[in-house]
Image 1: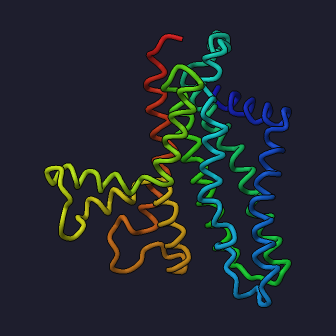
Image 2: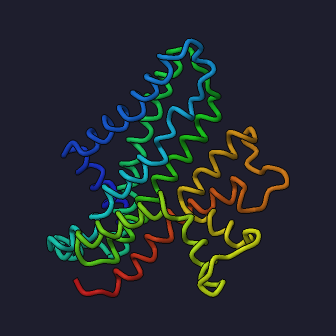
Length: 269
């Protein structure tokens, strides 16, 4: 369990260097201020949706998750400090797991502070939000953060330099935030003989849409808001349910880091 020591070290280093404090302030401002502007200008705050006030989570959490995790392994490797660390009783798996968990904790603390600050502001102006819905929304936001920190650490472990990790993280961010829908469309175009496909959209394309981390997060939150927390809208396909979206987010939190470790364990430092 040496990875726990490295995860704790990551968190304590971020605390000592004010990185954690800066993240908390950043999230409190970006969640709290828009919520205040939203509810303070509405006569009846009870008619305002709290979740609409914190919708920035779908952009902010992935961005910060990748920012603080892209150099977790590659940065240490480029500086040469990774060789010293591996000279101690730590394995390469400890390094990757410790980085993934430690960076995820940083995002979780900041996200928790931001969502709670927004909730306090929202309730102070007469808004109303179900405690259960708030807890589930917060859990999904934390899982989204784990998905992006895990992916960031996986990319960092798979490449040799911090610059390459940064490029890979930016590309992943843009792909999942803006370009994921183009993947099934491109595949349909290729499979149709490099011509525009006609007819109804196939089921596999809809399934592929649901495999993106942001799409999965949105599916899960919509399932929470639209079905009263049942997460299984009647008549919908499996990939449209909240449970499938939850599974996809868990996979994004674990699989990229595992793949990055698989590459990292065999390369020369």
